[in-house]
Amino acid sequence: MIICIRCTQPRQPQELCKGRRHCQACQARAARISYYRHRWRQLDKNARRRAAEYGCDVQPVDYGAIFAADIAHPCGMCGQHLNPATDEIEFDHIQPLAEGGAHAPHNIRLVHRTCNREASMRRFVLAKVLNRRVA
Ligand SMILES: [Zn+2]
Ligand SMILES: [Zn+2]
Image 1 (cartoon, rainbow, N blue to C red):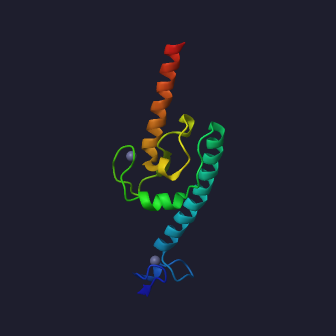
Image 2 (image 1 turned 120 degrees about the horizontal axis):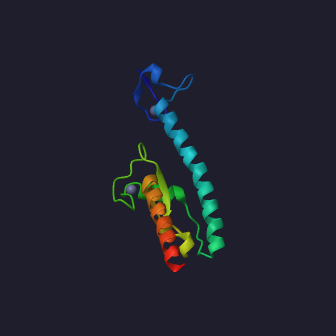
């Protein structure tokens, strides 16, 4: 039995990363966190650009802090539990940027990726129906 230097859990030798003193679970967690950090930077950049295009209010947004605070809350769309281990989780502007919503922490929530996809599909279909009626 070997103690992982990161999580301090007793591990079998084959559970450790090769040539390292931390376990594979810790390695996977570190990879996920750095992956998210990278993605969050991209998200913030894209949102800022779109917010500027739409003339929205832009405030400093710390996606890491929002994630940490909101992950304990249910999905903002379906109300079901968010499980970072099994669910793909996305940030959602409660009032969309396209509708003048602010790029600010109070206007951002966590939702399931699947819920977000469904919602944008609904908006798309609705927009099509409305356009047809107007035409
Ligand atoms: Zn570990
Ligand atoms: Zn959901």
